[in-house]
Length: 188
Ligand code: NI
Image (cartoon, rainbow, N blue to C red; front, side, top):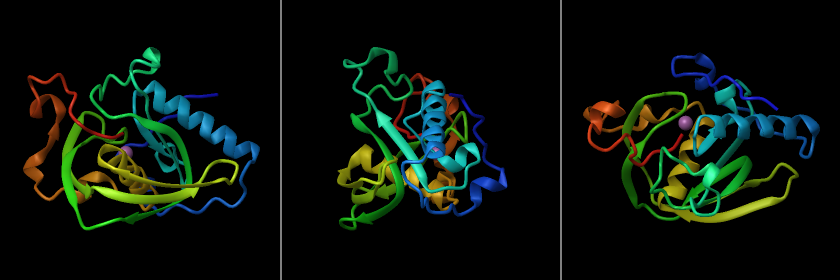
């Protein structure tokens, strides 16, 4: 299908609350997901939310493939990230499992070249549907939980800088990590 243009921070459409999807299994939803996958892969992201390509619907995708299983899709931006199964999540709901939070570096395809230290819940349950309406119900922790929280924030018009507690921990990747080859934590 197509690699779509990703909206960047400052575009008012990224700040809107997205609408639930009603019709599962439709051709347009499959086409949307194909474009989202193409776009995420082309930009070497680990996740993408529909509003980032200008579609105001509650749809996210994320995937962190294991490098040894698929070298073409090895995620060079986040080579040390744990494996997260490729997931389409429609109309997601996140429930924290406890009060534990931690902070880690995140990036976003809508905020290219920057990173910030962002607090997130460590342990969550997330529920939603795949493109055909089959229920997805998982628990997740660590990086997996972080990716889900980051992507779902996009559906409520929230970008990660709004969650940063200490803005000295927000900046250009190359300045923050001059010796680390810009590969530190992060999301999409
Ligand atoms: Ni993002």
